Amino acid sequence: MKLAGKVAVVTGTSPNIGGGIAQGLADEGARIVCVDVAADNAQQCAEWIERRGGESLGVVCDTTDEAQVEAMVTRARDAFGGVDILVNNAGILGGQSVLDMPLERWTRQISVNLTGTFLCTKHVARVMVEQQRGGSIIVIVSTAGHQGQAGNIGYGTSKSGLLNFTRAAAMDLAPHRIRVNSLTPTATDVEEGLERAVAWGRARPERRGRLLDFRKMIPTGQLPSPRHYARAAVFLASDDAEMITGFDLRVDGGALAKYWPWIPGDGPRERE
Ligand SMILES: NC(=O)c1ccc[n+]([C@@H]2O[C@H](COP(=O)([O-])OP(=O)(O)OC[C@H]3O[C@@H](n4cnc5c(N)ncnc54)[C@H](O)[C@@H]3O)[C@@H](O)[C@H]2O)c1
Image 1 (cartoon, protein in one colour):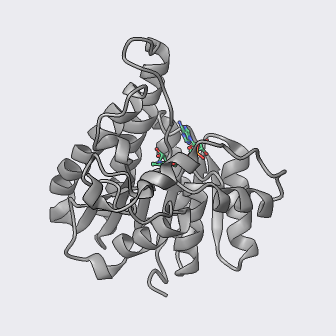
Image 2 (tube, protein in one colour):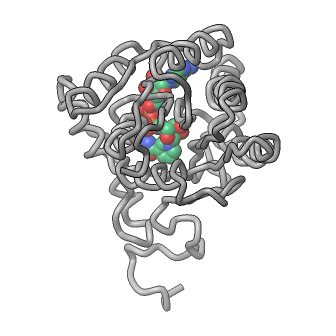
C-alpha cells in the first residue's frame, strides 16, 4: 500500500476520471474526500469507496466559491485529521470557437478550471504548511492545454494556464516540502466510466460516438482509461516521487510525442 495513512482530497468525482482516480488512491490505502458540486457525484463516489472497504467522505462544494472551499477543507481535516494529497480534477469540458464563445460560458469555464484549482490549492496547502509533513498536489490538465484545438477556446486556454500554475505553485510550496505536479490525460476511453456509473447504481449512460476517430490517431492504438491516470496519480502522490515537483506527467498514449502528420491507424510511418 503506497498511500497507507494518507488523506486525499479529490475534486470532480464523477464516475469517469475523478471517480477513477479516487478509487485508485483508495486502493493504495488513502482515505478519500470526494468533492463535487453535484451531490450525487460526491456521495456516490464516497459510498463506492466505502463498499470496496476504504474510508471516504463525500462533500458537496463549488470549488469556485472560496467560503465553500474553506468549509470543505475544514470538514476534511475534522474527519480525517489533515490532508496529504490534493487532486485538482474538477473541470468543465467542451466549448466553442473564439468567434462564438459566449462571455458567460467563457467566464464559468475559466473560473472552474483555473480559479477552482487555485482556491483548492491555496486552502489545502495552508493546512499542509501548518501540519509540517509535506504533501502532494496534482493538477489534471489535458492534451488540449498543450496544443491549439479548434472550437474549444476556453478549455484549451484554461488547461494551458494550469501548466504554468503548476510550476509557479511548485516554487511557492517547495520550501514546505509540498510537491505540485500536473498530469496530462487525453481523449479517454469511455467504457470504464460507464461501468463505474452502473456500479454506483446508475442507468448505463449513452455512449458518445466520436472516440473511434481518436483511437486511429493515437500511437498506442488504445485510448487511456481512468485507471491509467489513477496509477500515475498514485505515483505522483507517493514517496516514490519525492524529488519530482513542477513536472507534467503525460498519460496520453504518445499523443503529444507524435509527429503531427502521421496518422497511426493509416499504416506505417514511412508513408509520411
Ligand atoms: N474525458 C476526457 O477525455 C478528458 C481528457 C483530458 C482531460 N480531462 C480532464 O479530466 C478531468 C475530469 O474529466 P471527466 O471527463 O471525468 O469530466 P466529468 O464531466 O465527468 O467530471 C467533471 C466533474 O467536475 C465536477 N465539477 C464541475 N464544476 C465543478 C465545481 N465548480 N466544483 C466542484 N466540482 C465541479 C462535475 O460535477 C463533474 O463531476 C477534467 O479536468 C477534464 O478537463 C478529461
